[in-house]
Length: 105
Image (tube, rainbow, N blue to C red; front, side, top):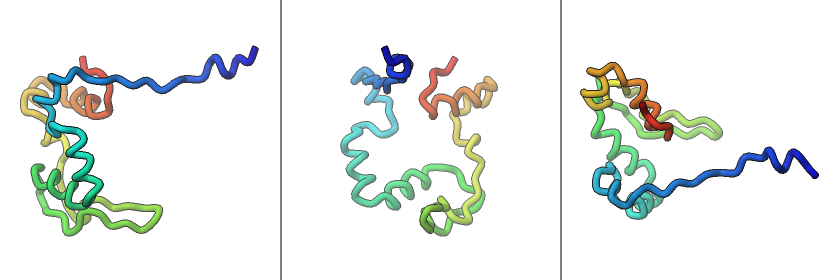
């Protein structure tokens, strides 16, 4: 028996409860994805405009394969974008972990 096949990790997929869509920043995933595909720079520009910037960016993306610079010349502090309660509780690090898909707590 081949042990390497047994120890291979299989991807796991989790489908959230449909009620989460109501509270999601994106709402309808399919619509959001289609907007991204239609014009990626416009998509990310619209999202970035909702954030606080100390200095605005000049360009959304500067692509020199294989390198990309995002929000060129813009200055922000991404931790200021977390909800105030998370910052007040000192759980801002947990908030960033949520963005990576790990459970907070």
